[in-house]
Image (cartoon, each protein chain N blue to C red):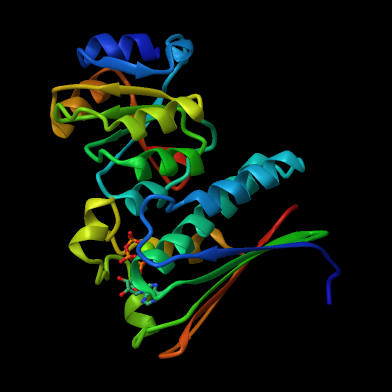
Length: 121
Length: 141
Ligand SMILES: Nc1ncnc2c1ncn2[C@@H]1O[C@H](COP(=O)(O)OP(=O)(O)OP(=O)(O)O)[C@@H](O)[C@H]1O
Ligand SMILES: [Mg+2]
């Protein structure tokens, strides 16, 4: 689904990356622990990173994986340096009041799947 | 011995969370700019980031190196202690002694060393109280 549809689905607010609204997303990574995220690589960048982490390491992790779309869950207000780093990297940063479980459940119900070992589960 | 084309060295400071990951970010941009295949760059970036963070959160500080050869890229991470007493245990998925502060920054899954091994073609780790040394090769074909 498109990033703009994810925004509507999760009633999300967008903090950076307006230019990515029509980008197509087919998969997701979800964790508060960055090495869990880094344990799987998907073959391209059509994935969203869903996390409750609110610091620059979230953006760094997305950068290492070539991910450009991030959803911060549980109603967190992203710190200014996080938004700044997302902008610098040309990434879309969205926030939602939904928790991790419901965010992932909604994405899954629309066909956005998880990855393992470089493949969609 | 394969011919070394270029070598870069970076200082890594213990507990410096503000710039944590900036070395791996530089390494990634550097490799991208010289046209290395994106899937290779991604693997190097991940192992470099995991190694960099470990020096920051677990050690007294150290150095990282990127070496560019004709057919491979080498990441070397070296720190000044306190070392890893049981390497087999540290290498097992889920083992972590990360502090609460490190956990707040998203670390402590106990997946860093296993990830480094998984994404590398050659992975070598040695450790003593003097420090930990990790050498990682990733082939470019
Ligand atoms: N450079 C180091 N110096 C001293 N101890 C280390 C070093 N690197 C790793 N360790 C030890 O090995 C353990 C496992 O490291 P690993 O990178 O796999 O997990 P972590 O750093 O705890 O969490 P994660 O990497 O998933 O965020 C660490 O918790 C720590 O006890
Ligand atoms: Mg680690």
